[in-house]
Image 1 (cartoon, rainbow, N blue to C red):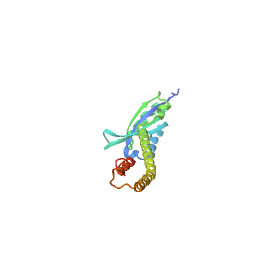
Image 2 (image 1 turned 180 degrees about the vertical axis):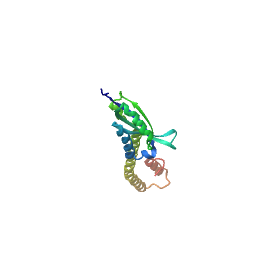
Image 3 (image 1 turned 90 degrees about the vertical axis):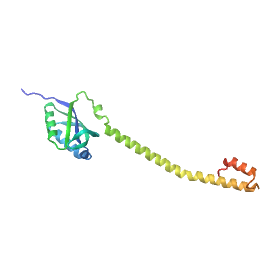
Image 4 (image 1 turned 180 degrees about the horizontal axis):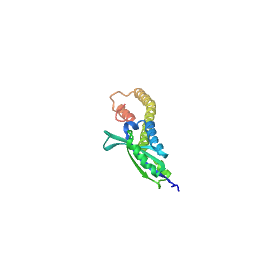
Length: 183
């Protein structure tokens, strides 16, 4: 009589060196190789976060956590853990049975994804502020030109009125026109 082994959903958190994780394609290939040897079906794989380690592992102070959801036979999990122990690229692994995990839970943003979105939003806001400032700079000379034309007109009116430079009436009209003598 043959024993039927049921494939279950597992969540694996793999810890790799941060420098190695910078090359996502190579890191993903290593993890896929380990899981394929165990006949696992990968459902989702993403970088969870890059963090400082509580203690050094293999003389590394930082590590990148890779979150992976996969279906595999329960008797093959030991093979995955053994392959990780033999691997020089993967520092640690934690594999949990997650049968209750929904597909929406698997698609949820990781801390690394949230940080990337925040950086992109900040850069977009900075670009918008720069564009607004550039538009404001283009409009500002027109306003300054209008103020200069008003000043010239006021000076011409002042000369035509025949008021002398030091007269109180002339100073009062200029203050009224430009506020406290500011030209």
